[in-house]
Length: 247
Image 1 (tube, rainbow, N blue to C red):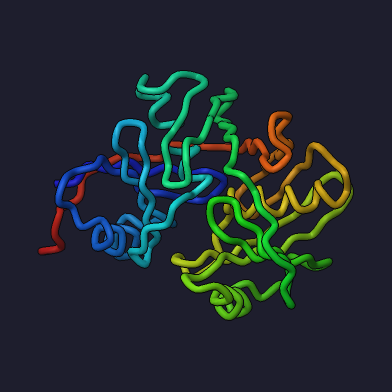
Image 2 (tube, rainbow, N blue to C red; image 1 turned 90 degrees about the vertical axis):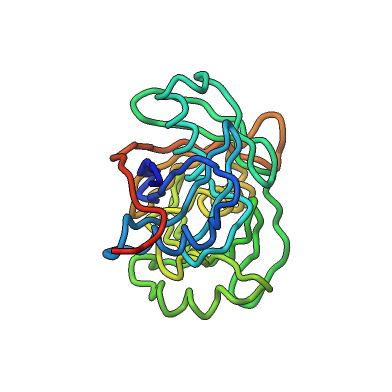
């Protein structure tokens, strides 16, 4: 049997399991993350002490997930395996996290790089690539169809984020590669869009509204290319599932 924990960060939901040798995590992710047919989720987190691997529902391993690392840290904190301020190792480096109380976790996100202006928007990297598209009507964007088309601009795919900026806040919607659809929030996308807007407006702090909840981003005092992102986290349930689908 595989023991698992289900967790959510800003509406982004994950299945968390412990590392085992000789596991086909690609197959496990593809099976367990199917909504309606299994546990369901936006990603599989493989936990190896304070090290994290992440797999999309299509079975592909990607180097980073911002909401995923916040949920993983929160689970370790609840279990007494992580301190109030601690670090998680990801495939893009070590991420510093802090439990802020009231089920809120902040993460110092990976270095953000504005790569290139494209016809449809700006490609920004924050552990993974995001095409940031500015819009005045984020509510009525056809995220599913446009996202499917625009998520193939890079070899290996890219995420797509539509952002509406107003005053000291932004609203955002995200199409995630691997999920092949809209997710309620995406922390690396939020960090990428926030950094881009703050750089343009000369701001150090911004509020973010996603379909899955509210966030706050603050530009790092130690590095102008990084932001600290804070949002809600929650552990929803735990259980066991058979290793092979034989029923």
